[in-house]
Length: 360
Image: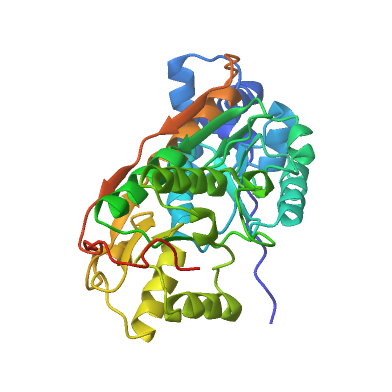
């Protein structure tokens, strides 16, 4: 079957003829560079709309030196936290006429490096990155286009950064548990660390994980809880082995009476494991998690959460990057957004009992 001939694409010359201006003038309007009068700009844009003009992105980037796109590298796109943050980034970018190219590192630094190489090869105008590690950042230091970080800070990198108050948030949440009488409190995270923590925060390569653990430990020290480092459990991500870790934790005779989860994905796995073990929230175990995911408000009981301004985090970092793309050369900003605790029904009081000081 013979295919019909492909309709010719509308060119800048076509738009110029329709608007009765020179090709150079039409190119300036359509490319977003140079100066023209408001009347001429309106005429060109109306002509482009009437002809259904579609810009040639490659040609435009060769003319303006801009691709009209930014790259975003996140740690785990399946995590609702990152999905909502990317929504904030995309909404801001769209208002500025900028496209977003998304990549997922899976929290692996080599995958992050590969993603950044691909995005730079596509000539993105700027990058927003959630660093997978704080110990391997040479590739970030080599980036020559504008760079902004979100969710995780790197003190060694002097770039715009937007984070939340992770340490203070963990401190306040843990303090809520200690004030309810809990002494056997666990902190559970999907982050991986070989061997026991035992106070070796320098071995933690992710700033959010490190800051939350430090906040957890500070609250435990305030309450006189000894050996709290032993109550930090790593590697509780989505896997059969991680599920087995949670089962062992919950079936231990000296199991924790309260748990602070690092994120809503870990918390959901914990919620399921608690039910599988025949335990109840909050009568057997109290639970608090970072991130107000949709599911946390519809369970029985609904879960107390540390509500992070995730959309605002994405929105803020995009605004900082776009400001750089427009030529702003003020010193880099480090913005820390506050969190709030939404109290629901997953925290119960725990009268002091013998043997409550440790469960390891």
